[in-house]
Image 1 (cartoon, rainbow, N blue to C red):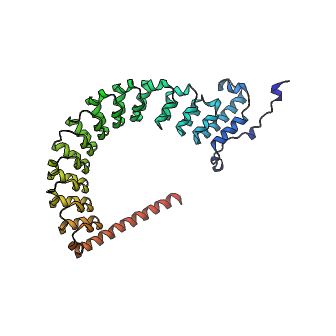
Image 2 (cartoon, rainbow, N blue to C red):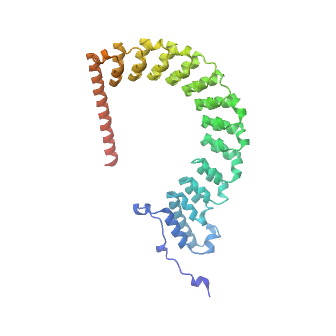
Image 3 (cartoon, rainbow, N blue to C red):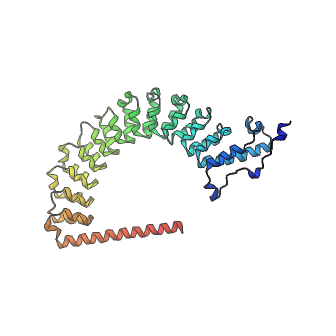
Amino acid sequence: MDVLAETKPINPIEEPVFKNNATHRETSALAVVKLWKITEPDNPRTTTTTREMLWPEDRRRHDEKKMSLLEAVRLDGLALQFCDAYRNDKEVVMAAVRRDWPALEYASFELKKDKDVVLAAVLQDARALKYASPELTRDRNFFLEAVREKGWLLKFAGRTLRADREVVIAAVRQSGWALRFAADKFLGDRGVVLAAVRRCGQALAYAALREDKEIVLAAVRDAGTALEYAKNLDREIVLAAVRQNGHALFHANDKFKSDKEVVLAAVRNHGFSLKYAGANLKKDKDVALAAVRQDGHALKYSDLKHDKDVVLAAVEGDSLALKYATDDLKNDALLLRAARATRHRTKFAYDALKLRSLRLFKSDYY
């Protein structure tokens, strides 16, 4: 009996081709691929030969099926688990892992060694490395490219690569935090540490060069609160820190908390940093005015709650700041008028913003 003669031909009209209309987009991509698997003919010519060697009819069917599978894995990458004949097709696998990184588990052994495929998955989630070929975790070129995109991937590099200066420099230039995963010898490497703190000042926490003025200055200019990790503070460093983030004043010593220029720089950046000022400067009118003009609620930390000028500056910024004033000023006619005016101005600004948002919404959807 001729087996091929007994084979029931498949009607192309009945084959499940994934459409682009709204109804079909709601159809499960997994279901579509499963149906393809069920209706796939047992034709060795389409499974054991390359596309170029197929008969024209088989080539057409191959292309149609691949397009349907591509649409499916772009909607649900895990559909790749049902595509046995396409797990070694780079285009299909790439589409799948770009949609869902766990799809890398179902790629062929050859594609699990492919740098492009694995990198596409790893850049979404480092856990994808567990499905990659072990060879890649020791591949210098692969990790060099990976850390240039996501510096923290240095964490998953082998010990040899974490001791490779070029790899480490590439990682910290992308993410200063990657310094924590570098080999210990780089924590005292001036070039590496400087590159890291310029990218992320808080990386100073992992460095061994906390007394180096140039490194500390670079760190606090990026993140003022990195002052917490600095040693041998001087006025220039503290000023740079509070200008970047007023709350850095918290990490300064008492000498600088009583320095008027330092405290003024801090409260101009963030009024609430008045909280950390020395007792003598909490009574200073210039400091108090600078603080409440930046944030009316900074009046809470001032010792000049009885000063009408300071309270007026505060309520002009935020009417609710009046609650911090002394009882006699809470009933002052001038201050009450200022509070009402501020409240009305704030309400007007809020209503205008709300109206603008509504107009934008209507223009987008109607």
